[in-house]
Image (cartoon, rainbow, N blue to C red; front, side, top):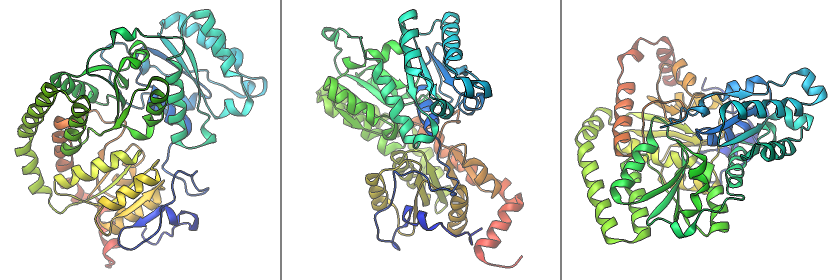
Length: 460
């Protein structure tokens, strides 16, 4: 496995701190033949918009696209569950020849009549871009007939990367503000929007509770446990707080330009970054009472979890982790959180990192760490073996890589059911990592023994 060579076109996307001295290549299309772990444009738009629970989500394309992203976020809703149904126009060969517009119109009107959603998102997939269906005109027609926003999401998978899907989703969310003017005289005090929080395992509810205790009002969360009316009232906020920078910074910039709302980037993963995020919001408003509430709450939360986190740190000291996630901003927090529990990060990378992200990673990683952009599964396996990682942290596509090698895995992406955000989430994260890394099951795993022989170069 470690003999696998790296494609020449990929060499500038892999950096070893201490050995290399070049600017990493990133934000480009995947190299043909590399079989990247990266998701497509359609997937990028779907994961952002999917948690809006009172909207209809209709995938205009083959049934496989809808199946691929069905319940992909695992985002929880405190009310409607419409988002958990996966609707598709199920385009087939005859539609490719004669077009799928009639099928789209029929599906939209029937579903809106049946489910009475607050809005509808129509996702254009690869084949729709190929056959040229006029999705915009169908959406305008159905909007006029039904009176609800029916919004096309131009997410043809072949036309870019997952990041282009994020941009398509931001454009679709921005469309919700059209022809809707909230009463600015009713603007609440200390009001924010949270952008890029998807309520996986109920994380948005944990964060909202922190803000409630601080005295901060939440106008909308985009898009975790989302509601169409809340999002349309988002211009009432004084500040946009961006959690997932890769997916939502684009919308924050658009809202700053149109509504004059400033934004800050935060992370709610790990003790250090969660505390900083809450302090940053309190300091933005500059109210003495708000700052006092924030400080007291953070001290109480840290005191609650600190003894157990310290105990787990003693058990994990010196173990090694490989991290591969969607956005690089999350990678920063994971690196800090793993250091807090005594683990060394030896491989770290992302699907959609920008130049500034990789510059930061170079600064905060330890010497010898491999930093990788848009990796393939073979590359990840090679680096995990070379660095003798005890744990892989990633998403659904990285899980089989770890298990095939007999290495512990922690899902920090779409499919997990346990919240990992906030102080409470940090404790869940530490426990999960401890239980995974120290599980005796790996000693019985044949593949793990083969990996050890290969990495050590010893004969069987």
